[in-house]
Picture 1 (cartoon, rainbow, N blue to C red):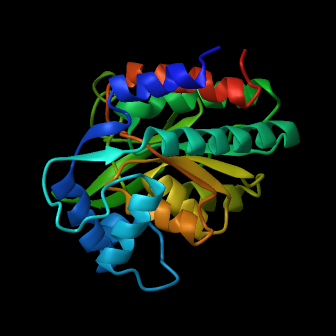
Picture 2 (cartoon, one colour; picture 1 turned 90 degrees about the vertical axis):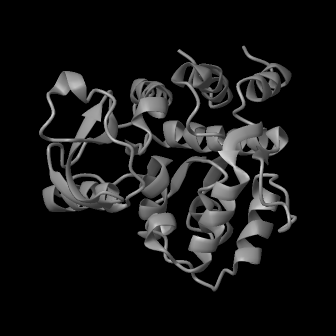
Length: 271
């Protein structure tokens, strides 16, 4: 079993917390865009109240540990590892409850190249515990707006985790899937469940639009978020995201393995 102290040391060594690769400039830009209700950073969330740029910065300082000083505009952003650990404990508790109640679970990621292994291990563990891991609308094509214009992607699943692929690429060239912030994939997946009259998820696990899009529709959702993803933390503050874990979501995939073991152990799902 990985101790809390050992995980804290790993978070800092792998730069999952502490000074992270996400720049202060990038985070502040996201806070400005969120305050302006730019859909690129809302991730499917429709905030209930106005959020100024200062409001968002204050929330992110509280939930992540970034500097609350608006005059600090450059350098690396920072995540408090204690806040990461606290959120991981709440994240694990939600998984434990889902396993105990054997609720259907939907997994999805906009960071398949980095986080697929993390979510897949959780999906395997919940499946072994008797939860139905949902894979609705597989193969459905979705038009998503990107910085390069509207692109068509295909909804697919790997080890029970939803991701988006470029449909015109051979499978071997697109194993890791596409990076996306869009809430459209989770909406299409949930629509597929309704159309098939299948069971709806009692829990949605993921990141980006998967969490905010599901939470906005009233589903319990938990996930991981970087300092430039304020939507998950606003959703948590407003009660539509159950747990948002602050950490760098784009380090090497192997660096998430200790988190996987720690979360599964805390959730009593170690195999």
